[in-house]
Image (cartoon, rainbow over all chains, first blue to last red; front, side, top):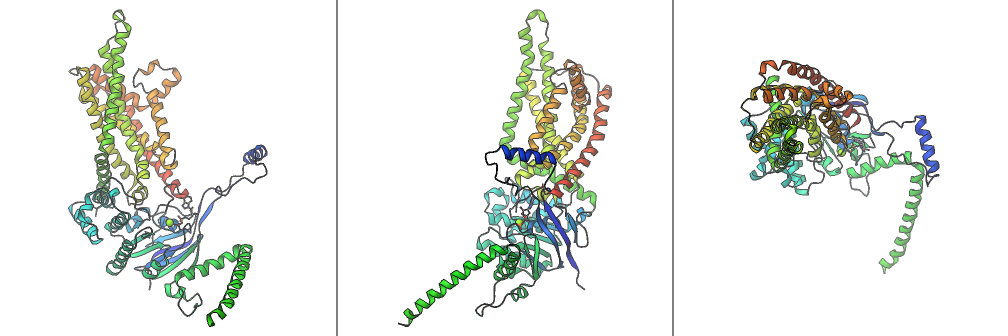
Length: 319
Length: 276
Ligand SMILES: Nc1ncnc2c1ncn2[C@@H]1O[C@H](COP(=O)(O)OP(=O)(O)O)[C@@H](O)[C@H]1O
Ligand SMILES: [Mg+2]
């Protein structure tokens, strides 16, 4: 029997208010557009409408697995993680974290989870030690052992001892991110939520952070939900990957199975990136058929031109 | 681990963190201290100025006026320092970018506010104490008749009602990420006007006096002036103490309730943070 660490059931999250259509506003709008210089121009209202950040998303994360959520900017990854960490409330649907609903069992869920976000989020003038002791106390821990554990975790993550007592703002992004991971590990969470933990890191720091994630899974059996827009990272780290696109979950499987969705091109296996383009491209066609048609016409024209070039260059090669 | 120990740890987390922040931003605190001292002194000099301006025959007691104004500036400095440390509970963290980490920790808001408040009271007492020492030195004030202990009791009692108001006002920065912090200044400005900080509230128009009666600062100032100017014994302060205790008993739970409502609203609408 599989036990689920996280269950996401039909979750919907919107931001921004429904457009307010009070008659006074209608009159006001008419009046302003009649008097304005650009009277005929439609009033720009793109930013006033609600954004559907998550659209009826469902999936389960098994205990002990590394579950990846892959998607471009604005696809709803952070919103998903915030719902799990009690920082946002869902509009519809339900999330269960170890069987507990974050909406009603806030404190209990908070004790089980911790989170690392893209931006390191520390008191800039305080040192890693001061920041981490603060974090530990919030989780009810303190005393001498904690100071030792901070040093132990930070050195394990490759931080030099002298950096532990200097202000955070003097450290590189990569080092700050390691301290952020240390802060999350300090509370010994059952579930670790990693929101783009390697975005913006240099290749070396990136690999180090990835190694730590692997180590956690192997040694502590921590369940990890990790978001990323790096296809390779998802492939290297994750047992299963969900693909999120404009708030909708459009695929969920092991990286291997996802790759099999795409026909093999020129004999070599497709990358996750190909999967992503394959899946999202299909979606686009439904929504913007006209755009796609014109794009296809253009592609056709270009390939024809390519063929012409090929034909012309062929004889030249034979010569 | 027992919940009580956990709660004490969490309360201490905020005290220690704020102490560390003060330590690291010490230059800024020093600037603020100098500003506050200059402010207190210049207001208090009005007392001597009135005596000089009115001439001999007017019989204005400059020393009394100075002490009257010194008490006003010190009590007011103390109360506003408490107020701002509490109302900035959200703004500080929004500015540092740590707000989500604090609000996702398993800490009840009561415990959070308790930590912030303990620090606010202790630090404000220290801060005001320094200004007191400087003013006593500059004006060569005679405090031999004063009931200092009674003044302190009045100040601490008054803190409770101010804490309640502050918790309620701290909702503004939570709900209005851009302008919320500025809105808190309005509350302080109105309280300064109606509470009789530099004058007895009887000189105000009737309409404003009504507000003075519901402002806890009015009673604190009254009580502290009685103890320091007239040496009123502590056990006779009850008429000033009971109103502030009643206000505190109502305002603190009300403030926490309002804060929890606002926090839920912020979590529903995504007002805590949106980047990333
Ligand atoms: N707090 C918020 N307030 C308003 N809109 C938000 C908020 N958080 C996210 N959004 C919007 O919801 C969508 C999904 O955002 P997000 O979850 O941050 O995506 P991702 O993390 O995948 O980049 C975006 O259109 C974003 O602008
Ligand atoms: Mg994000």
